[in-house]
Image (cartoon, rainbow, N blue to C red; front, side, top):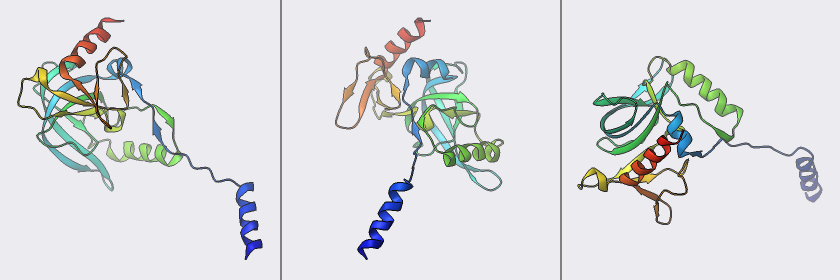
Length: 194
């Protein structure tokens, strides 16, 4: 039995297995702002699952615009998707781009992931929402429930959007928080820099 194990081990070292995961690249907040077509604080008022001819095409949400920072300033609501896990009634800071899926930046990827994205575009083109959440859905950052004024709302900051060094962030063990007023201060300063 021992010679068989050595033979298998020897073959494994001659033909190493290569596994590549898809890893999203964190994007600086300034770049996220430039790429986004819409940036807003929203309250999700409804959501539903959508399907193409054969496959699941994610979710479509309608969000009441509480405060608009970029794009759609005159609208009272916006439809977006396709990522799951947003809570009906929940408040979010969202960064959206036009289209069924937002273009993403990857540190690494694999062919299965890229093929799945191409298939999603083919299958879901006609049923997906007009706007997509950036960073594979992670650019819909939850706002901590608060009955206080909007200025006291707290955003649970996404690790895939790199804040600038001058942004004041509160952290606990696993989550970073930013006050809405702090986001707005940094947003204005980044927008003024061309």
